[in-house]
Image 1 (tube, rainbow, N blue to C red):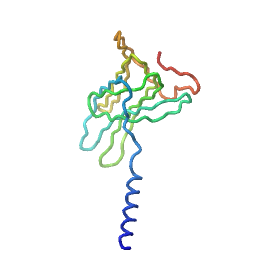
Image 2 (cartoon, rainbow, N blue to C red):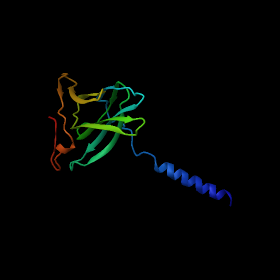
Image 3 (cartoon, rainbow, N blue to C red):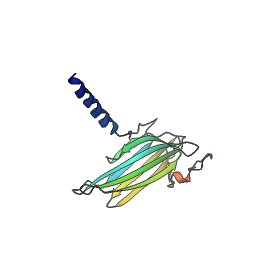
Length: 167
């Protein structure tokens, strides 16, 4: 009988820890690796911690998003695969956290696009001295022709339309 209270205590402790687990999920590459991310970021300092993430969302015809996962931008060059022929929302978030005060800054930039097969995408992501940049370019694999993709957020999605924000 004496062991039972400890078993109950361990169960409660386990449930408390499990409840604090994050629901974040790492993005799983789909198909061919058609998105090259070039990242340049600030190093952590004594007073600040820097982090940058790419969030990938599937967007349905009602403009509702389905979170597919995140990519931690922690190396200068990352290549992932994003689905083609589907409307996606790509969002980069820059996070600067103050180590001692607990406060911080979050900035986000998004692109609503429908990636096309036969094309590669290049993301230029920079977090340098309070300057944030997320630029996206499309390149045709055959001809090498490039174009800059106009930044549009989820607010440009029109429910029920066959929105194709890019040609």
